[in-house]
Image 1 (cartoon, rainbow, N blue to C red):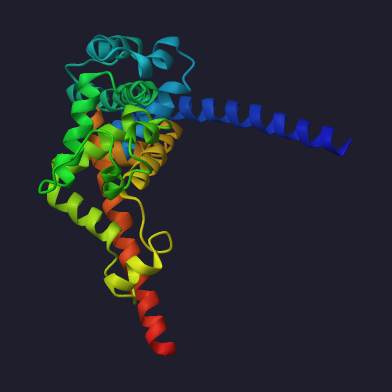
Image 2: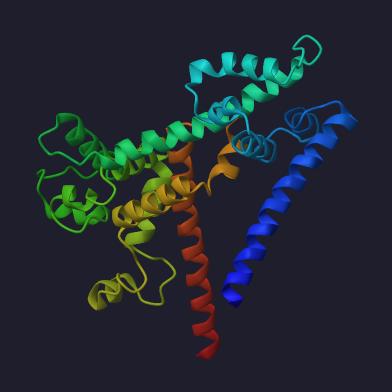
Length: 295
């Protein structure tokens, strides 16, 4: 009985709040002479806050036109804005800035949805060793990370030197497909010096209390070091889940003036990977200081 009453109260509150919200919108429209979209654009600075408010307003609208505007093709955005202005009876000559603001917001909203589709497509595409393009990307990854060390053969234990688990990296891409390789290559090519430094730190942690000889003898890599490529693939998985859940909207709406692209996603991956290394160094320094105090 208590459960039924609780559900009844929640349903009543839902309808009450929904009705009250509609009433408030109506009152604000009469008082200000502006619709909700106008109030958001004129009272909120450009960026994630404005775009997310616009997205919520469009998605929760009773109008089918407004609801579907968040998923139109990028080429149809201008016409969609004209239709919205006509529906809301807003004169574009009197309110020119509104159209510009709505266009920027819709480009971000639609772009985020398209970015998810692009990332998902890469994630679903499996690595194919018979595909010359896939093989070329993998070999480029080696060249960017180990420019002074030639790869002896395509199937080689050397791949473990950059953090793969076996002698053929294709088996490590199963979870994230080509997306993992795209991100690793982007990082290694875009900032080769930083990528090589992160790789070096992952193989030879400088803040360990052991010397290099002791490190290799005790095989402590699993305790403090990490596998560069595997961690990169795992971070790709993390970034992918954050993207799909919508958790990256605030970040992308703030950094992308228009539509977020695959490059923005890859830049986020690079920042996360380098940030992870910085945090690891700090933790190691804390451990080192703690050990010194104990001794």
